[in-house]
Structure formats: C-alpha cells, structure tokens
Amino acid sequence: MSHAFAMLSLALTAQYTAAALAFPLLNKRRRVQVSALAASVAMLICCPLLIPPAHIQLRALAVFLATDASLRMADFARCVRARHAAAVSWGTYYRFLNPFPTLLALFNWRSRRRTSDVSSSREWLRFAIGCGLFIAMLTVTLACRSIPLLRENFWLDHLLKMALFTVAIESLSQCLLGLERLAGFDTLPIIDFAFLSRTPAEFWYRYNQRVRAWLTANVFVPAGGLHHPVRGILATFAFSAALHEVAFDIATSRVDGGQAAFFLLQAPAVMASRALESFATLWGIAGEIAIRATTLVWLATTSVLFFRGVERVFPFVYAGEPYP
Image 1 (cartoon, rainbow, N blue to C red):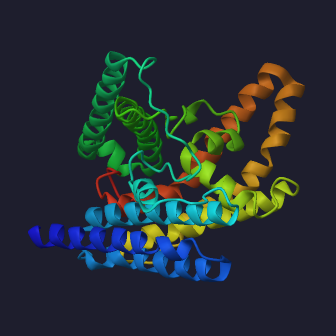
Image 2: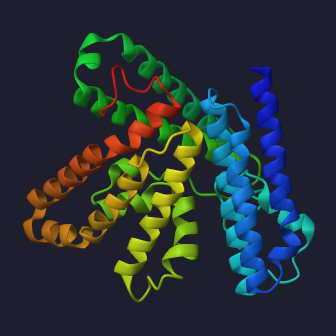
C-alpha cells in the first residue's frame, strides 16, 4: 500500500507539473496553444497509469484530478482565445489549477469573498449534516451485502442502490458546498436536488452543475448549440461520453463501453424533454405524473450502464453481481 501511495504522489506531481508548465504555451496563438493543450492533457491522462492496477480507488482519484486539471486548462485556453484572459499572471493561473472548489473549471468565474452574509454556524451545520448522511448511506450500502433478497434480485438491488446513491451524492454536494463557503467562496452546489427533476433535460441541468457549465461554454456553444440545439446537445453528450469512458477505462484498466453508451443514450432523451413538457401541460396532473414516472424509469433503466462502471471502481455497491 505504501508503494501505491508513493505512485499516487508521483502521478499527482507529474500531472500538476505538466499543467503548470503549459501556461506559457497556452498564452500563444491558436496552433501552438492547441498543440500544447493536447500534449499536456495526454500526459495528464497517462499519469494515473503509474499507479498499480490493483489499487483502483487510488487510480480513480488520480483520474478525477487529472480530468479536473484538463478541464481547467481547456477553459483557460478558450478564454485566452476569446481575450477574456489577457495579461494573466502565473500566480493567477496556478491558483486556478487548484482543485478546490471542486470541478469549478471556468476561468472567468470570479470567486467572491463572503464576509458579511455568510453564517458560519449554518455552513458548519450544512457540512456536518452532509457528512453524516453520506456516511449513513455508505454504511447502509455495505450492510445491504448481507441481505439474501438483494443478492438474488438484481433490479431490486439496483433500485435501492439508486436511491442510496441519490441521497449520498446530494449529501456530499452539500458537504462540499459548506466547506467552500466556510473557505470564503460563493459557489453553487454541484448537485442541485436532481431527484426533483421532471424531465431528463431538467435532470442533466441540475446534475453536476459545474461540469454542465463547462460543457455549455466549451462544447455546446462552440458546436453552434445556441442556433442549432440538436447539434449542440449531440456534441455535448458525445464529449461527455468520451470523457467518462476514458476515465473509467483508465481507472479500471479495461475498455468497457458502458459509460459511453449511457451518456450517448441521454442525448435523445434530453431532446424529447420538450415534448414531455408539452404533454404535461396538455394533460395536467396526470401528465405531470406521467412525465416524472417516464423520467424515473428512463434513468433507472439506463443507469445500469453507469453503475456497472461504478461497481468496478467500488466493488461493494451491489449486493450481488452487477447486470452483465
């Protein structure tokens, strides 16, 4: 284990060194900038491979941090091209590479110090409740492994784990939000009560707001999504599919395809959300119930692909065998 942590330290050092050294080249003209960004991202992605394959969780952590740094570098490069990042100092760029606040990868986002309107007691309470609920959900998940009914019935196990996962990520989001506000950052929660979503489009708007904002600025808008929404949606989910697939493949040392399939399947569902909204308007309460049920069934069914990858990183998620 000590060797694995040494390799983790080496991987993280290499990742952030590559990201830091790219700064002068990211300030150059487009051709040099794109080449430097591609080379740096490639190195960042490869660095987690320094960690032994048996230590999947440590490798997954390195992959997460490499992804976060890559998103930050790409957005910084975009801002330079758009002349939103003129005369940026090394120190400003290095502070931007700091992975805290988590996944806040938009360079032109301005952190505002909250000195008079933040309640420390409220944020400590938010942090404590978030941590407590997350630990409770993890404890219940581990306890479920001893229940024969769940080991024998995949779909019952999957639906329960979806519910536990939903509470866990919402709790973790609030926990991180409390920490960030206590540190002086005015941020939004990563997950914004996604379980309240009426349609798939609303779900993906609420789920991981920070990466969604990055995808909007760096994929959706450049793909022409403001004037051609279908093209923008397809490009966004194709990029997200590739990002998640590569991340999970590196973490688990195997090419799976499940993550790519899951995120690609979400694009048509998002495009169908406007029709679902119209249906709800036409049929009132019955329509509202119907579209919420449709959204829940869709996410429950397709998320099998997502959770199969999660199970390979954290082999305690399911009580029995994950769906093949």
